[in-house]
Figure (cartoon, rainbow, N blue to C red):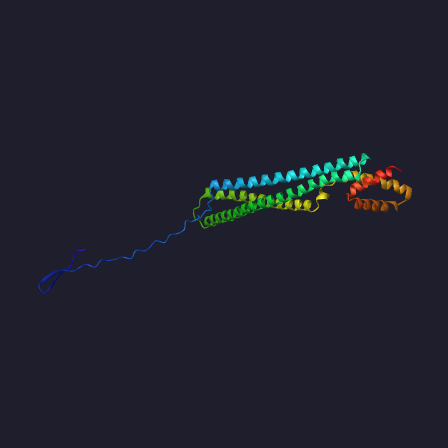
Length: 264
């Protein structure tokens, strides 16, 4: 724009032009349609989490299997000991109690192993809960994404069909993983309860009863023939008395009474 010439008192001056400042309108930044902030988990971090979970599961399961094998071993030792006590009349109670003490020591070892296993399963449960939480978050996020795309599509807006198909396949996969993880958490809870019950009643969990049960039935049948039905309660009382007096399990007291009765 040309400058204006002004004559004042014979002097010629130029009028200084005031700069025109136009207000610039800031463009409103619209959010990208159909796009939300994604949950970023690096592949390396995810791999470490999966490895940690897998190792925790293997460690807990190995300990659990070792405990079951130890229980079966004690039960087998009880069976063999009872058979030996039944078949060897010269095997006294003093010797028997020393042998049974060894099996009790094995039981205490199982109890310690159970405590370790419970802690391992608790750690595994924590890791599974963390995975469940992340899967749940990812599932809801992608469900919202898919519902958003569908609503935009209903409004006539252009949407990415490939993205929509990807989400339609991903969501059922996430739901299955969520169900599997929840199932594993329940399995862990079940094993923790199972191990606690074993620890609380370690003798019953490792005892062997078949030998004594068969001998009791044999004695009961014989005594009923000789003395009638009242003989069975008397037999039970005698077995309980010997078990308490000698400090031996009822199974061995049953065998002891059977040995005595066999002599007559």
